[in-house]
Length: 637
Image 1 (cartoon, helix red, strand yellow):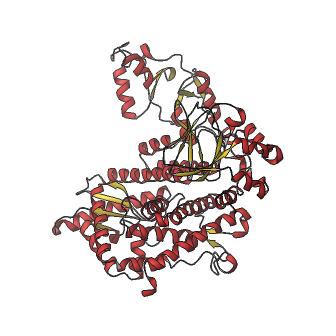
Image 2 (image 1 turned 90 degrees about the horizontal axis):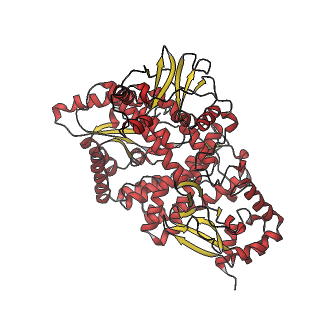
Image 3 (image 1 turned 180 degrees about the horizontal axis):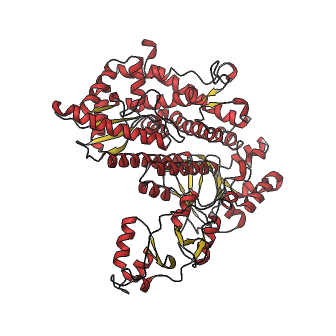
């Protein structure tokens, strides 16, 4: 009798290198020896320094994170189809890093003794291993050789644009913070704190003679070696190391590494005989590279103008592109980008509050709606937001609302300035209809739920994907409780919401052909948002509401929670989670490639492999819509 488990394993492995080079009968024989390993989130697969196991690993579902001690830096994240733990077996050495399940995951374990003969039988597999060892990559056949497995490099430190960095000039602040050699340490420390800088240049007749960094103050003053009343010349590092202002990022990095310093003094000719023009810090260089989320987060929080945030958002997009190029799992990528996007919005609100020069009259909550509310807004798209403010007596209502509308208009204008276009349907807090008190919002939602016409269903679909960005969580929690109370009282609303979830047409027609737009500006293009992503998003929202799932707005995470709540449908819901991530990743890549929203795709530009991957998700969508039809009894409407 045929072993169905090994057949399933073989069917999976045949899609990934180097197994795709094997004859299927050999792959089936190999698969008979494969074991299945289930790991919960954060559980250890192997430890750093541990002797190699008798098998290596392939990710079937989920992901594995590889970290290197002592800093515990993330070296790599292995996604579906990726191999890890093989190199130590071939090289006969201990594991150089730790492997853990990044999320609840299933792995295939393949015995090295069973696999080794095939490396000799198939020259392509031997070449794969040789090239992966030589190039230090998990998959040397991956597009553009981006998927690196660097033993000593954490994510984001490898730069895919090193050639550009050799030509790219550094940017530095022209507002030089400097003082004389007789200034007291106390004064210098106070100025550095006020100006939010990590170093003070010491000048004499406008020429640089030394530098004091926060490290100098810690090591020389905080330790008691010098009193806080000491003069700058007593603790400054001198002579100061100087460089010309016209230097590249690569040159600046090399200069800092060579001298073991974190700040460079930039002068007119690169010597200390000409006027100092600025200081360049390691932080400035990291910000230029734009590949460190921690640095970007700090830069966002320091930004005092919308223009500065707009510049940082371009770096966030570069970070996104780098993560996609490196094949970092979308779960991690989405969370990082969402955190950075939310931080940008928070800072815009903080700047607007300063500009308005009046304290908010009552507590309020700023909500992100739609794709940003789901933490799925990876590309620069339009804004959807709303504001809730505390209830006030009727005679104060107009005055309070006027304040929040003024604030909202300032915020939405700021968001437009940093790259979020205005919502074409005006679903923004600057619209009086989307800037309401808590009671007004409760009444609005009650109307949507008790009078579920097409417009009400559409509005609730957008609104119910909300996320707290700024303000007090209490108002949002009260609103969430009201939504669940109302939907429980009026379950017929779910039937209307389900009908709305099925409005988006099927992705394919006869013979599984892609259904494309028949007319308009995007004639013959495939609408990946409307035909593929929206059916999953709408269904995930509907099912999450029906289960009263709180605080989970992301579509893939909603399906993962549903799989936990409904084990009998677990396989389908997990497939929906993976399909959502795959489609979102595909759309994002297309958007970055064509510098647009990635929504409309020219099918003739896709490879056969890309079309196959898209069609795999369509089967999942069809099964999900069938479940919704049955569960919510749509035939009775």
